[in-house]
Image (cartoon, rainbow, N blue to C red):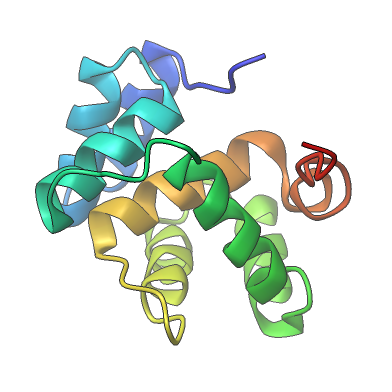
Length: 139
């Protein structure tokens, strides 16, 4: 099952983050890709860093695996995430989540890519992301 945003969700977030340019780039790309996170992530990544030649493994899934290790044990990020979910109309709180992902040490993420990741986390929920979306390593 592919997790994605519908057009209404994209429009709501565009209005909320209308003053945050990196989010607009991400949301425009999400809209062009019918809300598909994986396709949008790959497109933004390729635009920023060049063509992906690692076709044996999904860059999106690899990034989520690294983020899972970083975020799921980070009490500060979890508190920030929880605060936003209590007040989902807050542009500053949502922007703060995006900046938090962007500034993680060791990850070459720009704000547009971070926006896609944060929207994915909001869609599936942080607890589900941390507990239930761990990829099957039996391949």
